[in-house]
Length: 302
Ligand SMILES: [Zn+2]
Image (cartoon, rainbow, N blue to C red):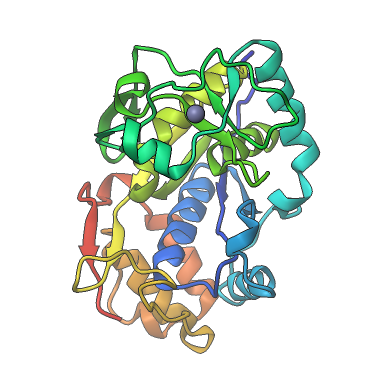
């Protein structure tokens, strides 16, 4: 059932795997400006569902940095690690609707039996209808359908996948007991009544999976706008893994101006020397989503 949502609700959803770097600042700025320019609500969610990747203290560091940069979120921050009961509840719904099954395939099984597709290995459905007991350690997969799931991205244009052909039945709960990112995100977006998602283009190919999960759970589907991502001179996404350093709180306005320029918004000369208040006021008055380049990767030299 679609929710009765009239007002824009956006969000920024970092993973606490390290300090906020320029790559994530872009998503924070764009989602914030878009929400505020629509007189909407803006929320922050900690995507810490993959507990093996979380770094102690990183969530707090990210929140303190956002505050220092003048971001103001409207409701309490939610943490995925505190929402496991909710994820389990919806998993049971999928079970009851006969949409998921247990899979005991090892990585080696997959390498030997799966073919390669646009999104990685295509799961061949080996364990479908095997009805493994819940006592056996297994991943949970959702049955996909042989139809194209297409959407119109506000920046990147039409995009879609036939999940059955391009990916096969995909994992919603991992064999190690952790909920899959795709499932957690979809449940959280519904819970927070998000109407519009603005995030990096590295998540574009996750979107058909997320829309399929929304449809399977009778959730509404939000609007999507995927942003170009900042890459280093080698073409790698700026991230902790590729050595991106944290953004400097002491030069908040200058970092914010760089993010705005990255997003195709031409700022007034000298804005980098203005106060945070002046910067945000200028941004709210001048922000235009239509100016964001529709290229997937833009080189950014730190
Ligand atoms: Zn399997």
